[in-house]
Every structure is written in structure tokens, then in C-alpha cells.
Length: 165
Image (cartoon, rainbow, N blue to C red; front, side, top):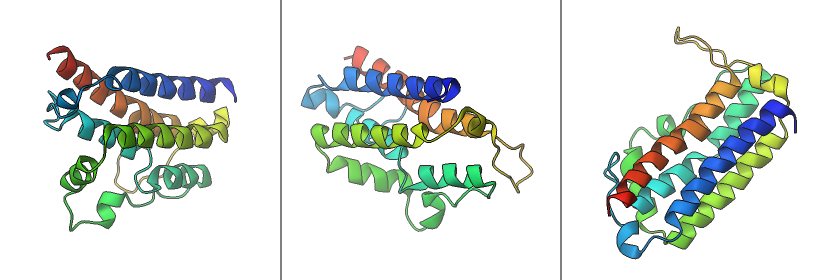
């Protein structure tokens, strides 16, 4: 892996390691504790992070589109306007055990790392075309936002929640 891609992959793996390290020892009560920022249970928040790495195949489709210079694919939430995506995801998460949720986190993390292995440093500079008048964003910026910053924001909430208990 080239250096910038490796740095991105390392940061992504580090945030996931921190999440696992924090939540693996959770008791059932802690797993069900509402998070400070989200109001969701710890387990639902971890599921949300894990599911966000796949988003029904959207992240991989987004990477392919940016690399090909195509418009971003529609987000799964846009494909299902009839459902409240947050409530739907919380319902999915509520049925999962901690082991299943952490397994999903590990599985989707590995899939993202595999996607990253196929990237070159120059790929990170490619931009997604926009039609909304917003400035274009590089693939690196998009991946940092979706995969690292988003998870890190939830990690901060998980830490605050579990430290308060």
C-alpha cells in the first residue's frame, strides 16, 4: 500500500480498535445504556458505526464512482424514502447481540480495508463531480468523513457515556 493510503487505513483501523477496546468488556446494562449524544443504546450506536461502513454496498459503489469520474450513487436512505433510516437501523440493531454487532464491525472493517488496499495515493486526489453547486470533495476527504470522522464522533460519545457509568 502506498503511504497516504496506508495512513488512511491505519487511522481507520485505529478508530475501530478503540471502539472494540471500549465496548468489548461492556456488561449487558452498559450495552443498553443510552449514549450521551445520540440517545441510542451503546449497542445501537456501535451497530450504526459498523453498518455505516457498508451502507448496503454504497461505500464501495461511491469509491468506484469517484474513481471513474461518475456522479455519486444514490445513498440507501434516498432509495428508501418511505422508511425512517435511523429508526429502521435502531430496530435492526436491537435484535443483535453484542457478539453479532462486534462481528459486523469486524467484518465491515475488513471489507473497507480490502477496498483501501486497491487504492493508489493518486486515487485519493480524485474528486466526485457535484451537481448541487457545492464544491467537489476528494476521495480522501469523503473517506475521512464517512469512515473515520463519523466513527470517531460516535467513539467520543461512547467514551463519555461509559465513563459516566
